[in-house]
Length: 205
Image 1: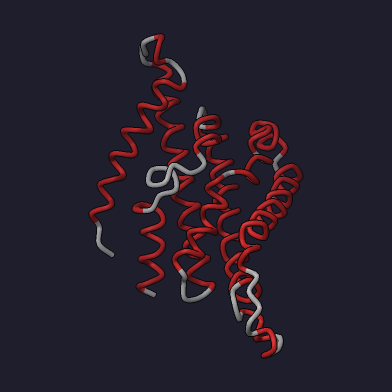
Image 2: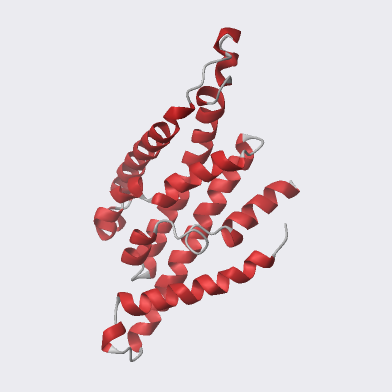
């Protein structure tokens, strides 16, 4: 249980997808103009990470790795399909993205319209694929740990985009130099937030 909590805290604060690895920056900067749309996209990304990371964990450990298919027959002990990892991971992300897009369009048309092109672009959001690749690299002990890592990474991304959106909403009423108005000041804010999150790297879990 303690290890699960450590994985969650580390994925949210220390290994934050935005501030530690700069993954998913395109949609992060483009959609973070209002808290409402940022929260909607953040929830969608968190949901995607929560379901795709454990699915890809199961696929990798029971189909792709060398000897992973011995549960079918001992004759498959030498089969190694790890060269298909990228293709399979991307296929899972794309299919799950399509599912999320259909659900959002069905139950929240206003959010679907406000997100526009950025909702289907979750399929090419590098934070989603990055979550699965980090999972494979870190070799978690079971699917539960992988799911917690995916959920924590999604919550970290959600926290990052909502925080930036809240700040950008507030600075609308401030006198920003014309040269920095828009993305210019957003880049500066993200840099300062990244420096602030570096303080969490001193935490030993």
